[in-house]
Image (cartoon, rainbow, N blue to C red; front, side):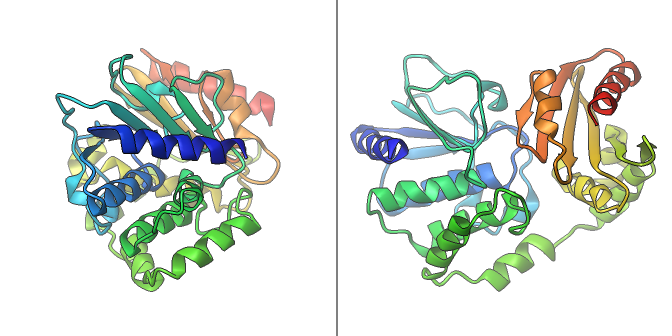
Length: 318
């Protein structure tokens, strides 16, 4: 009920605005981009002035079939009077600081210890921000066009790992059933998401897999990405993300830690099976996420030493 009222307030702010900036998080995944595109398509269809922003120079190629994908920009407009953050419960995920004088709305399904927006619509029980955003359209009796439905479906499908995560609930399938009424082609969407892999991805995955190390009788597995491998293969960073689920599929592995160095920072993606809550580990390092999927970033001058610190923390927990 609280979020329903906030959804109505969000719609009022949209109606009263002159120019809207929709912000997605850095290192974008399908959930943040699909939510941004769902809103962007609605705005285009209703002639609402806006820009969809992502700070990254390179966006995931596998999502370029989504309607209005080519309109995503890494340039900040000179003026806006409303900012809508999607899938960005923490400001650090955005990668850009905006004026505090601009009205802000945040819609997300990640748990956060701090609220930075004027209107915060957070629901950690939802399997994806796309599923949460769906209710914005329904509460305000807004038409969900085929383009909007396609974007929302992709966000739900991808963030739930094809409806396999513990957060996938009966209500998730109710939402998907309603989206299917918009005549989206789920077979074509599936092909676009999973059957357009680049040759460069097949060249870099073995390099990352060769970095595999096992700890505690195989319960913990670690892999890392070296940026020189990106240069050698021509692969994009986003094309390497599947390695986490590939390693987690090993029968003996319960937790996967995937490391990468970026600008003197160690980034670590964590995945787990069953009852192991990796969000606890991420929160220890001021990161965040969900029970079976979380992440953290640490200032780092020595990759090996900092990586060992994270590994030791995981081992102490599991």
